[in-house]
Image 1 (tube, one colour):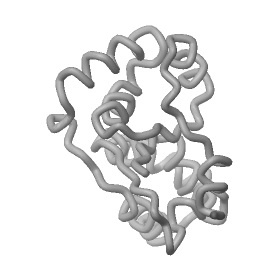
Image 2 (cartoon, rainbow, N blue to C red):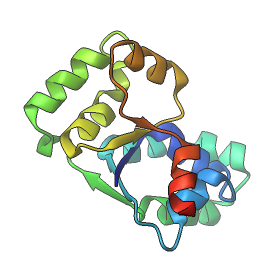
Image 3 (cartoon, rainbow, N blue to C red):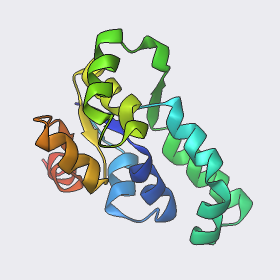
Image 4 (cartoon, rainbow, N blue to C red):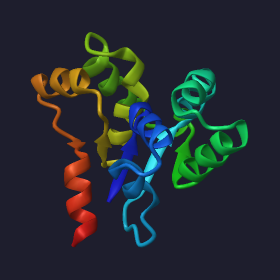
Length: 145
């Protein structure tokens, strides 16, 4: 299964490496395929000092956990996403959260599911009929089988 991971999921995983989210991403027999765009890496870099403050990690530990998590994700250049998927995603996100356009576009392009903890994004897109989200609970259940 193709799972597009957005920023808040990765931030949660970095902040608590023993969480359900981290266990899903780092599961050794994981048959899930995780994807994101370079936007995720940019956002990690932009917020690294805040993450460090919240997590109380040393610089070395923070880099180690970021590397551990991001190595489980395949990063797709936004230029490789079809124009149609991007236009469709932009029409969905423009009045909900335009910053999530790349994640929605990649989900459409890959014919996958979007794993996001952003409840307002989920509500906004579900109200428009887009229901391609997957929850942490659903992923935990998939891994339990």
